[in-house]
Length: 183
Length: 183
Image (cartoon, rainbow over all chains, first blue to last red; front, side, top):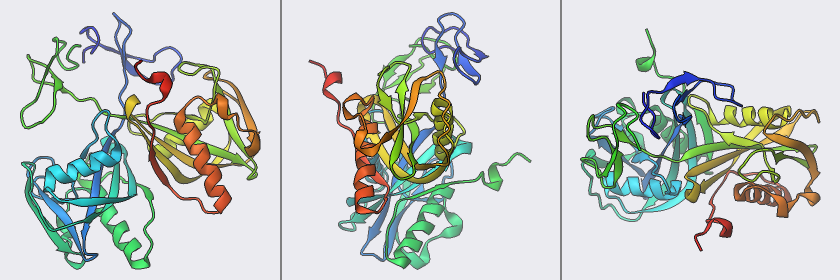
């Protein structure tokens, strides 16, 4: 690993005034902090009976279904990023609702934020990252073909809140899935 | 700017399959993505009448009051990071409550997350980043000496929710403050 600031090879050590090892440049002193990244997306709902899912055309988890979501960009609001990803991946027209789920994914160094969204029509125009965008009746969600545990958890929370008739903002964390565990 | 992967000088260009300029390595192809960073903290409350604030001993905003908060570390849960920062900056003993505010700070490329917290005693033991940790009656919050707009907004939301007797999770974004605007 090399220094982003001067190009020199980095060393692992504990910087002054800190308590944990970082990548530090022995030439210029630059510290390369590694922080979790935000993934932002939506739960796009049509007529309170169908949810929009996208069949992934890219790795990881190509060929599995996801809610529209992607990495938050620098300088972007999380709400705007959620709308942008819904447009890019599905071409769906939505009205954004409340922040719905905040999910820690520590093993992937990510924090996922999903918003509720109401589809204003059934227009769909999937981008290159999506094989197919499709509306699923709530009873027909393909639970065994979902791409990510944050998608599963968000859909579970959505159906539970819909059942009780009150939508809240939920916080949860996702344990590492068996497929990613070291054997 | 140099490549973290091979040390070569980076170029600005739009990577294949993307729509915006990034720092890309012309030698090894590494793309250096820049994403917003999460700041996590708490609103530590004692006996439903006082809130804990910390007088900052470090820049930026040294000598102004803040809620305990700091950067989320890789592999850490946001809730755990909020508790860790409360311990490091104030040495306070708390029970964590609900996720309370999610605040976009696009001009700083940050997303701040604050949790409600109940202090279990009045023990305080400020760390090196804090000049003084002090409990303020709600009526005596030093509004004109707060370090950050996310702290102000979170305290405003806290007092409003306390007034109506229901604590929710709030989402908001912070416009760029006058002191940071280009003249």
